[in-house]
Amino acid sequence: MGAGISGSVPRETPGGTEAADRVADVLLLFARSDDALGVSRIARSLELSKAVVHRILQSLASRSLVQPLPGGSAYVLGPAAAGLAARAWSQLDVRSVASPVLRRLRDQTRETTTLSVLVGNQRIYLDQIESPQEIKMVVEIGPRFPLHSGASSRAILAHLPESFVGEAVGQLQAARPDLDVEAYRADLARIREQGYAVSLNERGTGAASIAAPFFDSAGNVAGSVSSSGPVFRYAETDEEHTRLVVQAARDITARLSPS
Image (cartoon, rainbow, N blue to C red):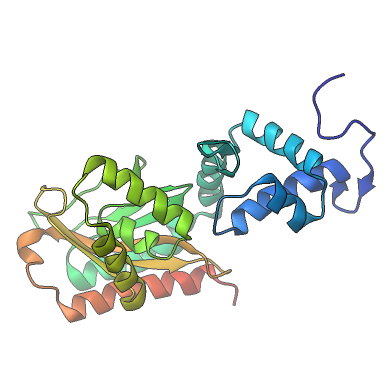
C-alpha cells in the first residue's frame, strides 16, 4: 500500500477531501504560530489524533514544506514553504504596488530606495529606485539575506515571533561569538517601539540605511522599505529623512490592505 495520510478512502468535504483539508489546516497552523510546533500541540489545536498528525508531518517534511528542529520533537516551516512564499509575492505583484511609493521616497531623499520582502526566515530585495547622485548605494535584486544584520533585515525581524529572533541570534552568535545578546535584543525592542531601524557602515562597506517595516492586511510584517546611501551622508540621523521612510512604509501597508 502506498504512502498516504489515511488508509481509508478520503471523505469529500466542502473544501475538498478530508485528508487535503487536514494537510492545509496543519500548514496554516504553522503560518499563524509564533513558535515551533510539535505533534501534541498540533493534534490538540486541530482536534486530530497524534498518529494522523505524525503522518502529515512526515509527508510535509519529505517535501521540505516543514523541517524538524534538532532533536526532532518540534517542526518549523521548511525551505519549500519559503519558495511558495516567494512565488506568492511574485503573483501579488507587490513591486508594482510599492513602486510609486519608492519613487516618491527617492525623489524626496535623493537616495536609493529599496523594497525588501520576507521569504521564509530570510529576506530578498524585490525592487530598488536608484539615487540620481554620482555616489550612491545599489543593491542586487534576488539573493537572500539573513534577518540578523542590516537595517532592512532588523526592521522586519523586530516584528517577527520569538522563533525567528532566536534563530537569527544563533546565526549571528556563530559569526560573532562576542555578540552581546542582551544589547542586540534590546535594540530589536527599540526598533519595534520606534518603528524604524538604522544601519551605519554595519558591514564595513561604507553604506548606511534607514528602514521601516510594512505589513499585510492581517497585520503581519511582510517586508521593509529603506533609503540607502554612503555613510558620510547619514552621519547624523535626520529626523525628516526618517519620517519620510516611515511614512513610505505606512503607505505601502495601506496599499496592501483592502479598502
